[in-house]
Length: 384
Image (spheres, rainbow, N blue to C red):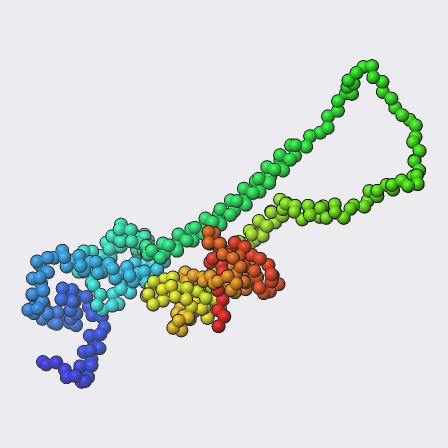
């Protein structure tokens, strides 16, 4: 019986059948051909092309098995990383997603007979974290991407800096306690001693006569008023008052203000109207290190970014973005900490501490100077 003509119902029905997934037992991995029924698979195995391919595989069986195994492993891990990231998921769920592709490499052509053996192999090689439960094998992908590792190191460094600040605060309080203890030990009670005379022949004289107040003679210099201080001395006293050192209480209040600003920190920082830079290479070199402005924020962590150079609109996670520091004198937005959501003017840059000094330009705190703000807490605003 010949093939159906193009355009006939029979031809269309055959094409629809060919698009869907077929049974695994009628698939030839060596020839990468899927047959629709048992008769078609039998005819294929008896064909000359299949016999020729069979001879090629028989000459170097290990090469073909390793090739199929490597392709199966790579495709499975790519699907796991792309679909589920580092979340814990059932291994069979990932496999069901994998076999939806009708051109996938079948497990029967690999070195692993069952999915359990394949998962154990991934666990031993350190590519996933595998654990067996009553509901089957669960796996967690271990992301070894350089960008992800760099981001994790940056977060660890940030946590270490915050921990160091807390340690310094505790050390300062301990020093204040020690100063208070040492000052209390320095105050001693007065000691009473006997009167000691240097010479025994010397007599003690006591004058009991009351002296009359002397009248001022004409031409004498009037006595100075003890309650009046010359102008020069008053200025000196005021200068000394201005140059006094900051007390321990004021230092403690400053440290507490810093502590309050840290307590208001959030794990999300993106907001509308700021300029950001893309730091992920997953979108290609076209967008890597390019700048754009955030036009919308979704679920606090996802930003809709409009590129500045080509007006393309992208949807990105905040982990793939970083802030942009403008020139001195330009306007920035404070994104985190106690002064969050305030506009400010950039005053100074400290490249050694990776921090900036700004002056708040709006709101009830207008004119206040804020020092040592990290680079990731401020970003350039879009002026249009």
